[in-house]
Length: 153
Image (tube, rainbow, N blue to C red; front, side, top):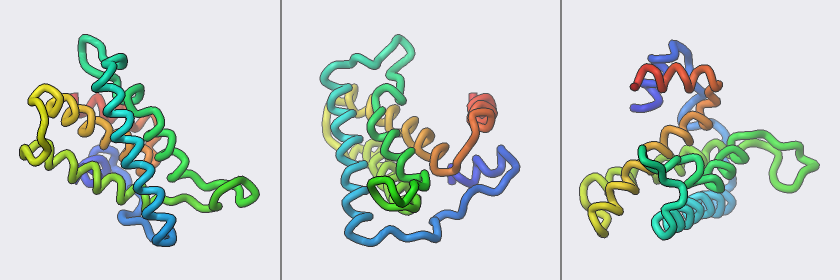
């Protein structure tokens, strides 16, 4: 639904979802697990330290730098002579977005246990992380991101 809303607000087509390219199953599973573990580790670090929090809340890009760096790498084509595979792994990012959305729904419905304060913070961070991952997945320009933010505020 978010992707449809973005396409409507920007008045342009977005890359196909789900993407046509498919990462081999074992590699897909490994990359998805890496993204999930980065999310969980970075979230746990923020819960422990609170170092990326300000008066207006935590800065998502600072809470999840590794997660977002991995997403950037997964949506970008690489020179085959570089280490790793040549093409992008947009299907892995699509799976990660689905996982994040499922986690957000579980947080909102009370399916994840923990203190109300920690769950509320994780809900907010996860919701905002979905937007940042989606912006990368949809290959939005900075101007488009600014237009979206202006329209939603």
